[in-house]
Length: 320
Image 1 (cartoon, rainbow, N blue to C red):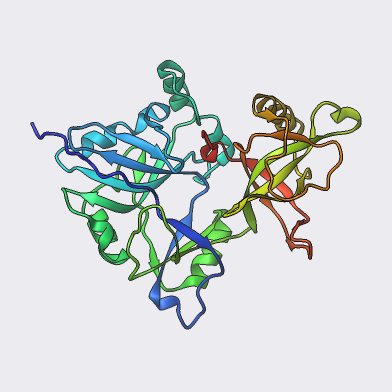
Image 2: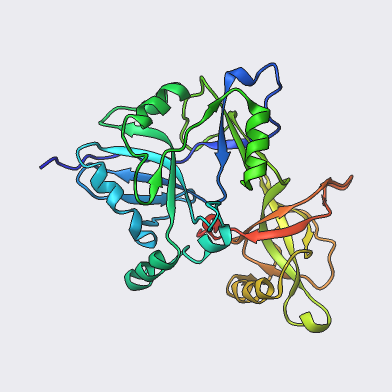
């Protein structure tokens, strides 16, 4: 029996939002599909078990029981792998709405039931630790060679999709036509730096999106009385949470009702923002909930221009 190994504590390396590399530079970059899911590190100590850790550092092992066999596949190969948990629709495209039905469920029986109804798939795209070594220090292309050598491209609930070197525009058009969220460009020479948002990785979405922290809400009118008409959005900065505008467009009735319940739990008496909020009748909330929005740019007052609600991001909920 191979003893389990102590694995290093690592966090995902993050990409910087930005445009695709220029045509004259694209040969220096690899291009991957940007998956519409939840980032996750898979920690396999080599004894047949597996631990899943979200980007926020939460243990999601019990939430996705169908991924447990990956630990057995890595028996004798202590490893930390990076990937994205997704739920695929009938056309093979990630559906974040379906994935949301799986998030946060820790009860064994309920998680098993949902695994049968909405099975997840773990898309693996990097290796940080293997057999006591640190592939994270290797260039991207060498890490991908190591990852490919693990033979994990035929799992029932996981795979290792290929990348494309160069051909940025072709990859962009292909992902757009296929209905994927966008493209992640990674410099071929880039090392993996735990917990860092690096310009060596760029994410370019087919929609202009932003993750914002919800610090409050305003009540709707008419049929929306008692429900959030809009949420008050902020961005984390070194000086604290900065208010950047209110977002109400795009919220469905179901989402407003769900938000009302969540915001009641995290309500507070004072604003969490470090700058003034020029919204009358505001209700305040602890800055725990994170939402993804789309918007067209910034106003001269550093407020969101034409913001539209996209979705709540339970995988980025701040627990402390």
